Length: 132
Image 1 (cartoon, rainbow, N blue to C red):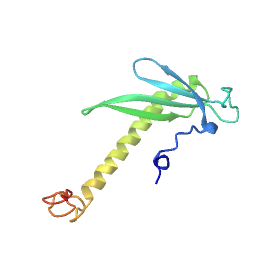
Image 2: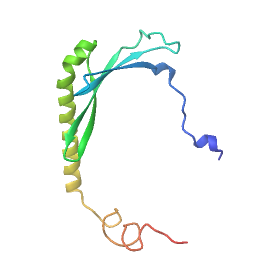
Image 3: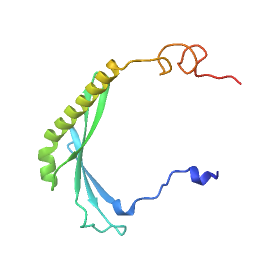
Image 4: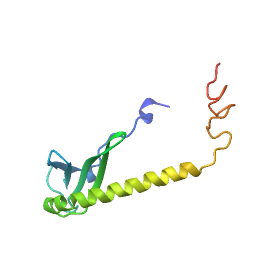
């Protein structure tokens, strides 16, 4: 197999080019405005301008980045909706984390699933490391 076939395709998708602008208050977060453009840099009117927000939430484990789409048709509306949309994204993230914790707490560990048991493939004595 030649080396080039193992490399990822690094070509830009010319139908998805955007010019990115960032607006921030330097305190709470930032809003990114994504303006669709064509390969010559002119505005692509066939695609809508989109907005996304970015902020950080402080947790016991440190700063947690939060990114979210903002449904807006102008920067003014995106600014107005930033806090509400950020709170919705945070609530959704908390729900997902709680769901993952519940799933993990109710999962049953059986031999061979990587628990703390012993034997081949379990991470215990003789498992996982092979000498040749």
